[in-house]
Length: 292
Image 1 (cartoon, rainbow, N blue to C red):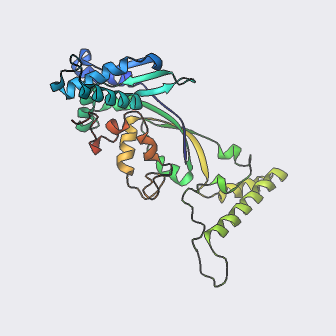
Image 2 (cartoon, rainbow, N blue to C red):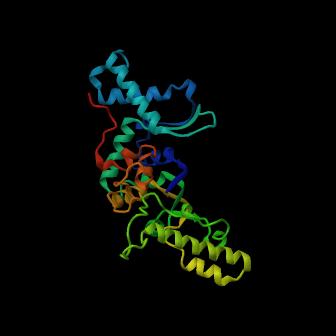
Image 3 (cartoon, rainbow, N blue to C red):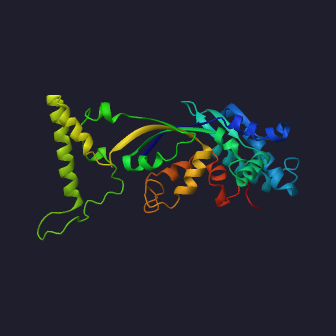
């Protein structure tokens, strides 16, 4: 399973919109824009706001203390980690979304209030190329509201390259599982997989040789659900919020890789998105502020 070309956008529009109901735009303390990371200053300004909000006893930044400096540096690190949406080829110019403490507090309040109040999440857009098996896509297709997918074509490109084991989802493949008992015979899943791939590749080659559609039809008919397909998926943070809360601890490793966290899986990818811990996985109650 692979996740490539991830794009996240419209934080500025979403966070402007969450203040529309009370016309409280003047209270926004976030920064959105493009800056040169070699001369970064806005990250420290927003970090100062986090210190002032959650550690008012320090009188920061009017009075410089070691504790205040350390906290501001830690907040700045969190802002950089979460808020850099895109970098240029030289990794020095960044498209940023630095969320201030008051905006984050309001955002989390709206999220906890329910779907009808957290509409701003629907305005944070996500696009990604996902390569996953058909059996996973069958479940992912249940999420239709606010999503679009554009897939590579089985109809047109199935016969364009050789069929090998790498054409299928094998991240947790165990070729030694016995699927029927015959004393003295090789009867493991690995042998079955080899035979299946050999037959599929035979059908593919026969179709290319003869152009007879009957071979192509049988190839399509018997293609296993572990076949890997790439789709460009577009959705939003509200959809991801719903998916992650419904699919956490799912027995399919492609959703939540509890059996092997080192493998790629959907929830692991979601956790890598900007501010995901605070906007998508907010129920885990991991505070953005650093406790004293």
